[in-house]
Amino acid sequence: MKYLLDTNACIEVMRRGAVSFVSKKLAQVPQQDVVLCSVVLFELRIGVERSTNQQALLQTATSFLTRFSILPFDQTTAELAASLRVQLERQGTPIGPYDLFIAATAVAHGLILVSHNTREFSRIPGLVVEDWQATP
Image (tube, rainbow, N blue to C red):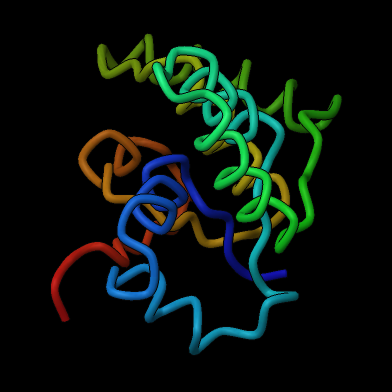
């Protein structure tokens, strides 16, 4: 495992398919080097539940999700997330809880986070972020 996809990277692939920059980069990386986490799965499921076309979106999401392993939000990740949250609060630079959980998962597993949200994630010490949606 090398990369953890953030929710926005997953949505980009599901919306734009093979023409997206994220899809093109995914095609260059061995599939076993890319994972998702349970928090991303949670956020994607919220999108399905909110959709006016739930059945079609669920089918698209399910097809996409079957390509990847899903890392759980475990004890190590929870403890790291708590530490990071307090550190960011003390610096006056907190981030949203779901992004914090995703970032902690990446750091705990030594993964590069693939996200278009580089501004928020840049606050996390020890987190490496790549933006695959940026034009090459």
